[in-house]
Image (tube, rainbow, N blue to C red):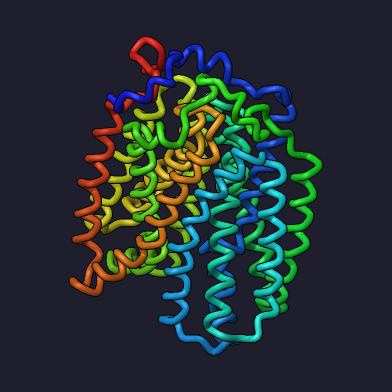
Length: 425
């Protein structure tokens, strides 16, 4: 059972659902419009994400005359320091509202991306620009994107988050193809420069199209206990640390595994083509997992779904060092994809259901910061482990029991105000 929340939480979960389970004052169609807009906001984080920076890494290093070690250190510290921006972003969203906070973040990010596209050189300037893209994109704008859906749908955001996750996958695939093509044909500066108009258009769409839910307009003095717990109350609950810890651990493993995926598979005797095929299968099953999790979340407790996802992920890690055939690898990719799809949807959806809308930005900001931090150190953990023993196998076998432990704790975790008779099995 989670720790008892503060005495200000005097209503049971049924009361909270009645007040927060549907979009407030914006209508169903506007709420789903916010889901599409939130997906575009997450797409706009591309220049601040590892995948986005990865598209320009090689030509950028060649253009600026930088070595990989220097750039790796720039990226590591920029990511770690940038994660701290999740907290003020969440506070501003709750205090000033989604619309103007998000628009301001987009305008600032557009300015940073443009400045980076005309960068003449210098390690210090590059570090500042990468730090700002990480802080504004990966951290602050991600919080705004997730909060848009969470505040629009409140305690019943799981299905919306599943649709949101699928849209993200589609948008990012298209963006990777487009940006990658521009980099190849016109160079990394042109590609980065062409992102600026898109960021400005997105900022305009936020100002004119975003429909602000009632509890996120900055009038925090009007929030009732049923609207949600404060950040302090959330941090004192077991629920926050189970879900935040589980997703942070997943982020650590997935970032390290994702960066060295080809090397890990090569250690098992699989070639580069097999590696690419594995990525495709994992992506496909992640999409299926996202939709399945959205459907199951209406019938099963999120904590139980998280436990199952972690169990699958741990099983995959344990089995990978023993794989020798393609059929075994395809099964592994499918299991990994489904588990990743589940965890993605759960991470997006849990905060509104567990803690309500009133302080959702700050709570999601704290959770996002932990996840970004863990994802930043994941590749370092994998690299040092391999350097120490010459293999990834000991690390994989060590991480699996840790995932199983968190899965066991998650299985018995209940949300604040949730009782055996007030929640699905």
